[in-house]
Length: 171
Image (cartoon, rainbow, N blue to C red; front, top):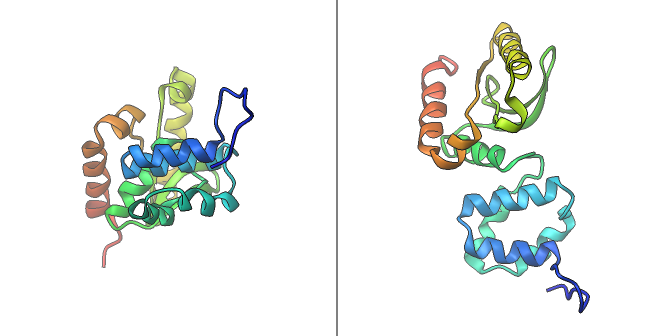
């Protein structure tokens, strides 16, 4: 769609994403586009051009794009929680705690942890203290590992579903 310089070894991100959308699963395609938006490789005003270049059945994915996700795992968790009927807010600032990856239905915090940012005792201690601060506010927190989100999503689905079923607002 966008012709690179004749000696360029790369294509424009829109071209790369258009091809990726065609060969990835829907969730992976959404995560790729979310990441490109978040990293500034793609602008919101370029989404029309991108989705005009993909097959018609894939265009429905546009409604699920959200560039606030800072990692593909956050996109996957957002899609899982929404598929379970949850209302998801991303990158929420919780007073006394700081920014969290996602809040489902106003009370369930989901932090998508990876080894890169959550290894070592100091990082784990900080995470545990944040979890205690969330609990003091009446919020629960689960921390699925990136490996589980990516390679064992059924475990994450079961965990979020169980939390929403077991601890959700009583009516």
